[in-house]
Image 1 (cartoon, rainbow, N blue to C red):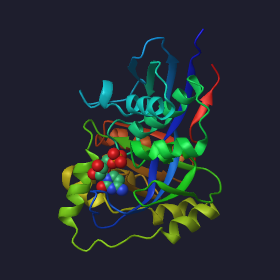
Image 2 (image 1 turned 180 degrees about the vertical axis):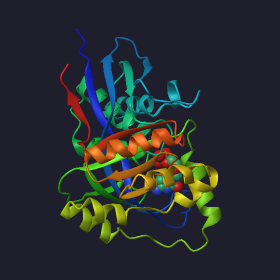
Image 3 (image 1 turned 135 degrees about the vertical axis):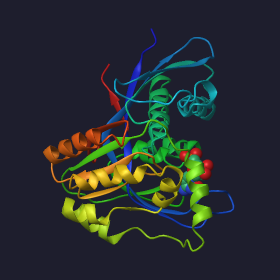
Image 4 (image 1 turned 45 degrees about the horizontal axis):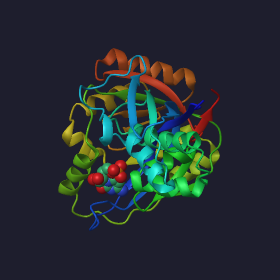
Length: 306
Ligand code: C5P
């Protein structure tokens, strides 16, 4: 009997996204501080007796997804993660993958990267390849710059392409609100727009103010310190996001920024109750497709009981 393995991975928000000038390989040097939030993708994997890799996608209720925005088959990052594990360990069996998605699609919260990270761990467990964590980290980095963080979770500084991680000290819980849009933004398009708009980009450094706010568990200081160098580029491509940011500020969010490459807006509340009030205000403002709360930090890839 083949066993099914279920793995959960978190979405993320970038508390800082410092972006330097584009490199020859098309990537940008980053100084970013990721925080994983309690909004999860769950990937189930069940080995097959033939060599096919199959993929099914299920959406959590309330997740608004533009038609055609989830790649299916061989272009999906979870499919590619399964293939990468098979190649790395000489596995010739196939696998059935089932994705349960709660993280906004093409939203700047690394949902696709979380799928890839969960599929990596689920396939490695289901095929019993005996992978070490370091080996999975290496495969993760070949799949995308945000995939290693989805494995890692918690709060971390990311240098290089964002995939050279070191853990960040944090105290307590932070109460986030995420406001999504009906249409996603393409990450490469936002970076290209950044290049067009920015002639003076220099190599970024991790923010001492964000690190100090995290270490002291001070949401007010964190709200004042969060920043995103891609925000102007995302706003140029999706100008309506300015209204979503204003709505979050009207509700006294401690800080509000574009999450990653957008278009999701992340707003920080003083408490769980305040984050629920910000979400309600955002919904009533009519400036977003959906608004929901999630706290951070959250654990990285976790094998769930079956
Ligand atoms: O690594 P991943 O496939 O997730 O990256 C998607 C795109 O985002 C890249 O092709 C690149 O255009 C952009 N990117 C970047 N610099 C980074 C990370 C991503 O320019 N550090």
